[in-house]
Image (cartoon, rainbow, N blue to C red; front, top):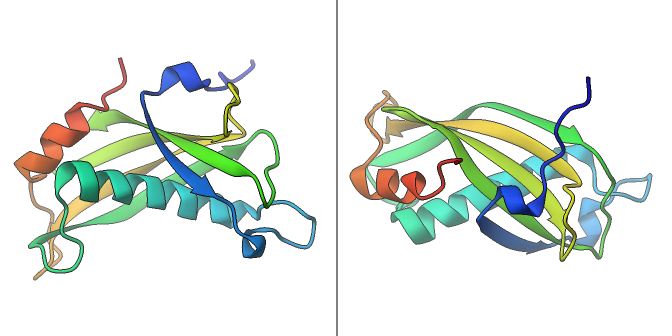
Length: 144
């Protein structure tokens, strides 16, 4: 059974990132763990700029509780990449994102993955409902 390789057409929201020299490992490509930082950067950029998440002083923060990534094709510095972002599931206090990494202008994903955020109270780290402004922003990304 062949897994579906996401294409650019599967996503409507993209975040551009320029790889850095330090992202490469001794094998000459971006190290696997760095892909997770690209995912995290894309999601948090969206939450801050589209959902109004206040990462410094807001009463609600989001923790990653699950993540995975499948690697299809290597990327390396100085590649310019775009992270596609969509929402697979939106719950009361959690959201599951699906993400894919594309070289700038290419249609097929180099890597794809997912992670789950749980929204918690900053003061006691107990799960809370996703704030309405963030929920509205996330609804715009629900996979069709």
